[in-house]
Image (cartoon, rainbow, N blue to C red; front, side, top):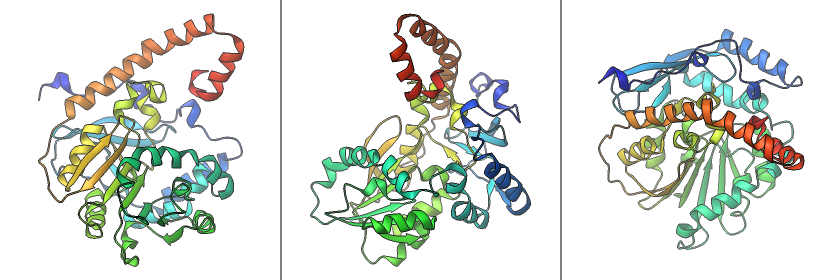
Length: 345
């Protein structure tokens, strides 16, 4: 491959110890961040992460996450998938999601508030899948993997059989109070339910899996032909459109193992027997399990182009927009923008 096509990011992607402004913990949560870093250094073990296309053609593109912590990322020349170079082993990962994830990033101390804050996601999901789920005989079986407190299921509870899988006991309790059947754990606990799902929800979950092939194959064993799978995660494509103020570094955080463009994700799902019914660049995508598998497609150059364009726009376009808007917009509107878009300050 021509060396000019390799992705080369600026030095801020290699500067350890300098967190992004919006990634710094509040004074109230600072001690939790420090406690976790100390705990994981002393107790967690890491393993090398292989590319999901099984080719050994990857190279380093970044060495730091948005919190300023060392976290090397690789991109694969053979498929375009971006992944962590090393990640916690299975035991460490399970401990993190059971004991630290919600504690560190917020929500578990007030599940009621968290539930209400995320109710908007239920309407978004309803609008996205209703074209297909409305054709199914009610009630349908819905499995939400890693669903937190269950907010995304709110509009589905009354007419359907809803099951939620998560590791956090406080969130499981809240979901149960809302009429959702709960299971402590992840995809490996699907065998506890006799019914097969009509719809599986993987909302901001797939990028956290340490062994995506294993997780998807486990899922497939509990599906039927025609089962729908909804996947939502931060798509690289949408950075070009201004998500995270064009800033790929803002997506990089330790809990994320993989970073997908829409093309890479669709091809991964296709290789596991899923047909994409609809998708967008942010990424929200709905798949139907058909069992018919496709071939590997290489999106390396596309992914590199998307990130490079985003970086250029972050560097040159955003300051110009901010300057122009500050000159022409009324103070009241500027205040509203700052509340809606914290990065715009």
